[in-house]
Amino acid sequence: MNAILTHNLTKNFGDIHAVNKLNLKIPYGKTYGLLGPNGAGKTTTVRMLNAIISKTSGTASVGGYDIVAESEKVKMICGFLPESPGIYSKLTAREFLEFIGELYYLPRDVISTRIDELLELFNLEGRENDLLEGYSRGMKQKVCLCAALIQDPEIIFLDEPTSNLDPAAARMVKDLISVLAKKADKTVFICTHLLDTAEELCDIIGIIIDGELQVEGTPKEIVVSFGAKDLEDAYLKITGASHIDDLLSWRNGNSNNRKIESKKQKKLRNSKKKSR
Ligand SMILES: Nc1ncnc2c1ncn2[C@@H]1O[C@H](COP(=O)(O)OP(=O)(O)O)[C@@H](O)[C@H]1O
Ligand SMILES: [Mg+2]
Image 1 (cartoon, rainbow, N blue to C red):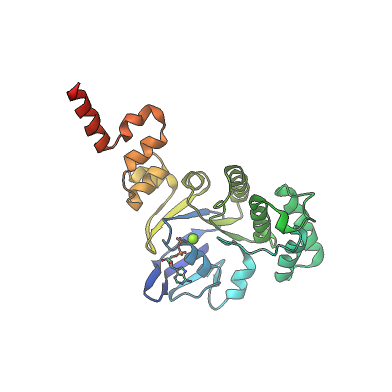
Image 2: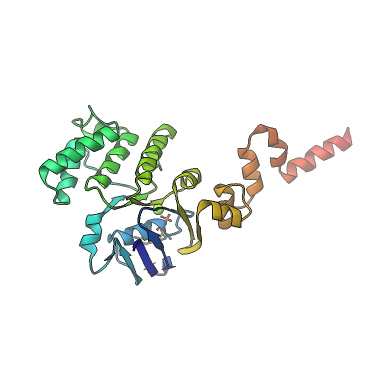
């Protein structure tokens, strides 16, 4: 059985085809990375799969439950970290997590034990009784991840989990996701712009452009089939980013600076040589 199964899943916002005939088949225990440029339809996809917005057409089941007919069940078995999560600043981390736990109808003693476990895992012990308004962005993101995990979901959706974080906080969140992804019984669905994160963590990658899935496979399969150096190289080829060589040689550092010289600069240098 598949954790996530969609058939021609489609969402239109008026004339905008945000997601167009998406077919996904994600087995349990896998980490799936949905990649794509801004506006490609990633957030719309995870919002439909979490029964937050309705689909226009097609079908989908998550954990074996239909996203429309059994939307309550879908919500109970899924953890979701939204792209821009809302938190209540005037609550402490513990109060906020207790509130989320109660939304899942968890018994109080279970909530309390889960919160202790999560605070320890996320290194938030000692700060749990501080108001969230005093937390740094990285700490808030950790609390939101705790909230997504409080009911020990089978299937976890993470929408851009490291965006807006500084490099150290992003690294920390990435390491936590890695711990989750390695737990064999968890299915993780992650939308990210971080190609190295995706390459490292994901068993399967899908690349979506303008609402349509263009490529799907293991990171290795995608890299090989596009004759690319790594997933970033393949992604740039697939999404048609211009000046790929320039971008990559710039990234490779100063020794390759000659390569990123623009045509205009080259012309200028040659004309200077001639005039000498
Ligand atoms: N609530 C909405 N109303 C109208 N258009 C929307 C809405 N949500 C998303 N869109 C549009 O759907 C497309 C896909 O958006 P989104 O799923 O947020 O992309 P991504 O997460 O890949 O950046 C974009 O063109 C976006 O403007
Ligand atoms: Mg998005």
